[in-house]
Length: 143
Length: 433
Image (cartoon, rainbow over all chains, first blue to last red):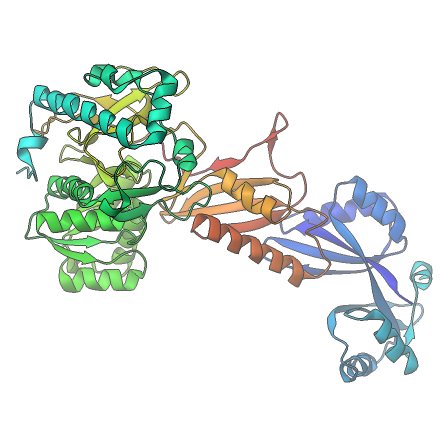
């Protein structure tokens, strides 16, 4: 019940993100979501892609430093209030959210929340128990 | 009018200086051979006995001493008197693994302070002056050396130490400092700050004695113009005593080496061969009046030229040029000695590969040290906080090793310039030499 997020080290210099995006594009890798956490001199680019395995191969060959992290992806109705219910549940159960970002699948009318939490198993139990639908890598690939 | 602290010495005839050097060298060599096993072993290994050294003409027979000897003999191995006779220790700034500790008897401190007093008087200092010492105090020799010299001259001494620019300027205005002693980069920074605050008319400075790092003629002009002073260079190293080994006079065309205490040679750094005056090479010092920590033919790694041209100031001691470079990879940043190997040690200690590059710049007359470290899989995490924490850890470890702030920049793997497969370790953008 997790999806594979790929986090890539990119220098905080003009053109570096473009280089990475171009590389993935050339290899027909489709990004579902992208988020960047930036420090002064570098950034961590987090992406959700259609094919995590292939992406890892491509990045490795190009000499990037990256990691693959299992994160949670919750499908929520694309309407007001959808997010706060999830956040409340995590808070009430003492699960710390390290970071989160979202993307929308227009055809399905759904929003997907990507969540990196300290304890995946507990979060899955809590969220699934309350009827929140967590999706797996397969669904991400299909979008 | 030229002022001298010890005119009979500073303006002695070349024959007199030669006689002092011959006599004192013979005594010093005998002294270390008898009291320092490290020297005895070194001399025995080179097949030289104290009897072979009859004058400075025999100096070349003695083996060189290097920083690595000082490291091997750390901490007491080169001390030539019982520790109970020593009254002071000074050290080079926070350089673990390369630390130099120097020992002084009261006699040694007196001679060192005399040297600094000569420098202060050569810069026009008298007992009427207020000497503002903004060199660091503590293990660093800058503060204690100039402080002692200023006392000897009888000047009113302001032991400011470094930092706290606001207070420096306030005291300078309120207490009428007339001679400023600090690193040239700090002098330039102070000059800038004073100009910005429109306080140029409130200060009474007439001269500055600036050393402990390389500076250019352009920087001298800039400081002189901004502060309306005459800026004098001073040279020294902890191993040999501290500041005051050589100092500039009113002619400002090089620094007179205190030859009654130190014999200077210039050698070819590759062959060790002694070069004639006027040729560029590595400066080598032999201290001939020190009791506790006399160094014989110590290789400074500073590249310079010696000249015996008659000086208009009346002093007769040989002059050395400003150092023109180094014969090793040591950098001097903010007056602190930095070796690339120290950066390497920090990285290896943390379990990271030593893929790094040191970039030194001078912004607003202040040195900045940046270390670029190539990112590795092991150092990486998807969480920014963890990578940032690791960066902070590196900054702290480098600060602990070097004693100064180092900006750490994490860069992409294989992004550091390599020339013919060998990484370029240091990029010094300051153009100091």
